[in-house]
Image (cartoon, each protein chain N blue to C red):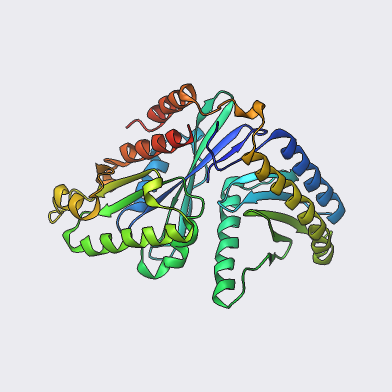
Length: 167
Length: 192
């Protein structure tokens, strides 16, 4: 049994992608992404980015978390959404359940109002999937009870580590 | 909080370098970035002040390789060491899978080391985490300083539990990879 804190199974991944694709089309955005709040990219849909996605995901998570700390300082539980406006491109971030963040990148071919409206619906749908994902993790089915990170896996990755970090 | 994505076939883990200000956390990550092959590293993100003091964090993604069809990545973060950046340190610890404590061997920094270690315990508690339950490695950095405390003294003050510890001179790269190898393997063992 994998002891990772969470996993994304294939059927959930495609369900998530389907919602992100619908959001992309209905809001006329350039990209929609799902990021976990530790800064790891879960899924993305839309225009291929011309920037480093891993850096982007970690910065989005840090941005969201920093703003939550600010919210708590002023007596709010959190800021559930963030909006960053650029001259050409803008970003809208929204909290989903279980420490997951939805990010929408859009330009002047759409409006903030439309993005916010469509995100509101997508947040509900994504929250349902993420919640069911966590429930599934508690009661694994047989298919995923086959250990991935077993002794053989660990040994092979340790060999990779030794090779990568050789002085 | 490690993430296994069965669809994209990726495993991601988070390692945080913690320690007092100017102790060598960023130096560690910078050395790793400079030395590993280009196809295994992503972009090094550093959010720092004009004086090169870490303001928010440094971030470096490393790809370890593909095993059983799964790409394994470690995301390395450093926290800002200066005392007044505690809010930032706290949030960078979210979802941590393994910690490297970079201790400053300078005898004048022993109090800063102790305070920082205590701070680590406090910040982890805010995330409902306990240091005893996490992969944890200590690095005794700056072993080349003329006033470096003997390792035995550092162990007594900072590592009575006898966690894995490595001597290092991070500016020269000594001990950097040994430290990272150890914490990486410990994170993997925890996943197993």
